Length: 295
Image 1: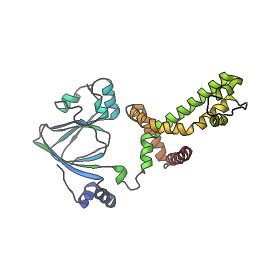
Image 2: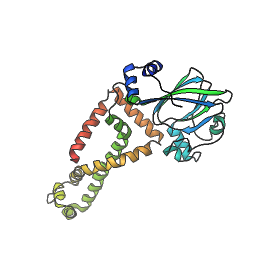
Image 3: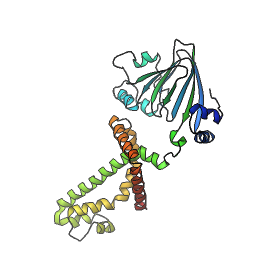
Image 4: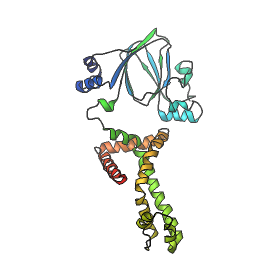
């Protein structure tokens, strides 16, 4: 059921900044829910796109926690349906049985996904970050479980939270950068090979391009093939940027299923934090320049 709390009550509960938390509640950026269930009740494996604080009030709640890479590994082995990655709701992997039976907690090698087991007793609190898969069960040896869940977006509540550009950069920055660089290098390499093979007959190849485009590539002038290839890459910059913007979300979705991608991404943002966000500042400058180029 839903439980309404006065902002002052939530401030005391979270022991945080009263101004930030009050603003979050007023603007509906945080919600509070009360969950109760009889012993043995389970909420099947699922994932939420918002952070949560779970306060156990009565009884015992047991949770199986698993990361997206571990779930992706289970899907690749056929141990879980592929919809678990794309949907993430409780309906996708609804299997009867206890946590031990479903996830093999007592086995040396889990039959499905690797993960961790957590048990909450009255007075305990657990932070469940957005994107963390969890399967929840009220302990069978207790009559009932009662817990309070506070859902919130830390980026919106925290004082000095990152801007919308920072969020977009964190989600799509790495795949966009890699794709743009590979496309740029491929353009130069292919153009260099083409004009090198043509040799002195390069102008015959340029006649297939629009006149204004050919002039930018040095039509009628003897130019080194590498210089001409770089001119080609620069001329195609606006189109390359548009293609990168279209492809980056698709690549980001694929990258979320790769464990090494998460490690590299985390390392980059750790470096950026240690440099006080200087990487993000350079990215903003590059984005501004790209915007002017496309116009």
